[in-house]
Image (cartoon, rainbow, N blue to C red; front, side, top):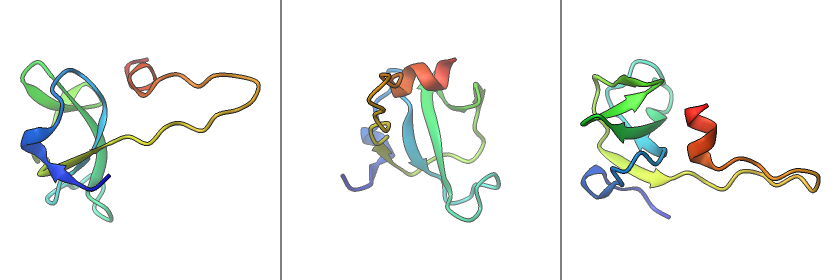
Length: 78
């Protein structure tokens, strides 16, 4: 999937990859995992200052034959 405008991103708490061109936390890439909650984009359960401009879904987690990985939403919220 290609990067999509942030206006089309899900706002139901689903963690997604977000591009933030003015981010200080990930200056090499500008890419972080964020989710929408409480009327704001959140990182580490805190609202972000630098707003994302684009998004794409998280890739599926690797699968180990011996265990089933948690969903992306479960992994971020624990």
